[in-house]
Length: 357
Image 1 (spheres, rainbow, N blue to C red):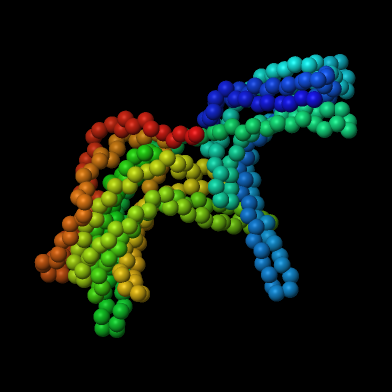
Image 2: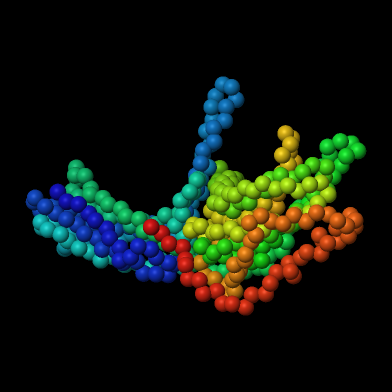
């Protein structure tokens, strides 16, 4: 009998790298009669899910799927000499070296929800007829660098207003303005969030929630028609009590630490990974009113030429009670813009990139 083992020269690779695999075929007991030794490499993106429907009499299951191939190779490592149909492998360990180059279009290894991107090397020892073949497979990991210099954009404040109708003669509105002073980050860095809240409703705002959300969009086909499914994952979720009285303004600031996870994923045709910061405020009544702003961010691995410096935040944000007229307060609120952000001149020397255990 025998066994097959596959080992790589390193743990992870980048598109364009040369993968070197050492394939070992161990034979013990007696010589092994074989027809060939074949090695195959496959890199694919796969998305699939099922949906069941019932009309009361019959159940119907629809299968949605899509596949994108990055890499597909197949070679023979050993064939019988002189066009013979079989040969014998002597007892011992037989080593073979197999090398191949990853295409530049390969995406990062990914697996979550309805889709995955995987790369693997498969070895098969083909034996004589009526004999079971000996097979082995081993996955390897590919990580594509995300250059923030190519994806960089200037963040703009996000403003949302919601009208409230508690009574026909008792109307009001909530307004919130969310600002981050940088849009591109590395895992391990900190997002500095600032939110200006303007309460023109007859109710008190009592809660604020800050989330860092990962959004994954999966695309699959049923027949020739594409369909999408969206999966959201809260990476960071924090809540704080507030007391924004009717007719008052509130300034809120918080630092959000970015954990170690996959960077932005936008090159695969069927799997897209995006991130955004969501700020949610609500009242404490039974039928509370909620208002949210979403600020997109980009997570990458190659930094831009500046970074967001750390800022000192007070333990509890300061509440600014309204002391002027409504017109002056509106002008004060609308005067805040992205130009208030400090200028950055330091070079981003952080080298902490995404690591895989």
